[in-house]
Image (cartoon, helix red, strand yellow):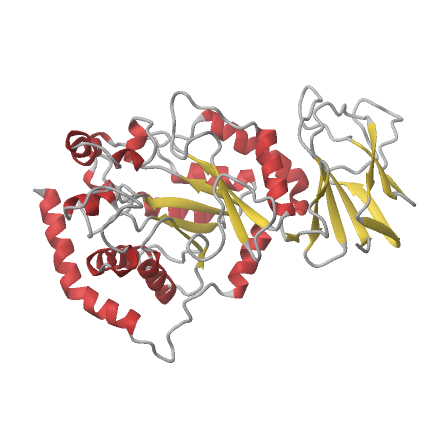
Length: 446
């Protein structure tokens, strides 16, 4: 009865509110904002460089692929999904502040949270559908909790939103599908009205939304509402290149963002999961930044709201690396080459400072000196060198060890000599990349 009541409220709201909303979208005025990403927001993404993705919905209870198990499912499974799963979804241990604090310590500058995935299940208090978090034993607005907590950590608030909605399709007599619909999602007025009503809630009730990730066909009405209500919102997928589960060999033109799972699945997978190592994640971040993109790294909370320990651990490993080496990631741009073998480069946005990130070295003993040759950079009279995170004056328990970083310009290239001096782990072993900072260098003419 509660579901029917909420659905009738939704229909009434549509009849009253949507004509004016639609008219506002369809009738251009001199004061209406341009429906596009603003240059300063694209610049913000390039400066940020690293974000945290959060995939979570009611089917995390069984550890399935998020939403997609409905495609091709028979009636029995579909009804179980829509009618039974909400009855047991109760994330009693969910703590939005813990998520936001973990994002902060990881070094992420923004977070993107699944407000609604393809299943159609809404994680906010919506009047558009009974299929949402308010009709579960938990019964509280998770999106509001998330947005408030992330904002408290001074991070960018991001929403993931799917225009493709399997619950809406099922209730309107269509089979769940992403690529085989009998209508064009952007032009189907009943669906467009539904999406506009949902996006109006999201962009009216939760403060400033810094980032929107639109996943699926039907993005046109979503963008219209988002940019009309909040023209400063940066739309990534749906407006810029967002390669998924890959880093392009050749960087896309303009700002871009690559999204990756930490394991093999976006949502929590309790069994049969294989996680990337912390080192692998860091090297993915390095390559993405060297090619001018931003990395959006995903986690998937457990059904009770906790972050799996494997995911928590890797984010903290990334956080330690970022605390030492963040200058090579934030507010940087591509160098004249992305890499020379296992040495990857970024350049400071506003100075002639280049960062050489030394990857692929797993056995660099603390206190040991190594030499590298860089062919894309040449020294000037003002060039200085250092290793991020350390002074080069002290190696713990090794008095007399020379840890000073040095360079020499040779006919073959810029020869650098550096020591790994900082103690980051108790066993003195550190498997992750060391970063060399070279100030006042010039690019070698190609």
